[in-house]
Image (cartoon, rainbow, N blue to C red):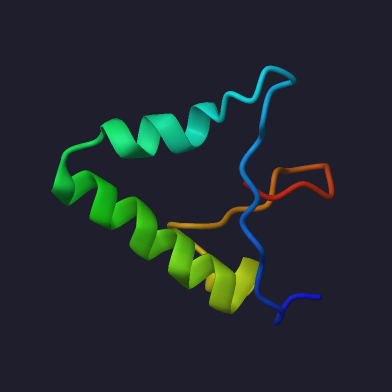
Length: 64
């Protein structure tokens, strides 16, 4: 539903690597803070958050 928030689930490879988490951890504190703040907004508002954070892919049911 449009008004529901999201759960953020990181991809984990068969060997146990979590590349997105590792990337976020490698960021400087300012960039890391921005990413985590955006994740907080997404978990609360989901796709209702809108641009610049969420955009529907044209011709599909996918959002990015």
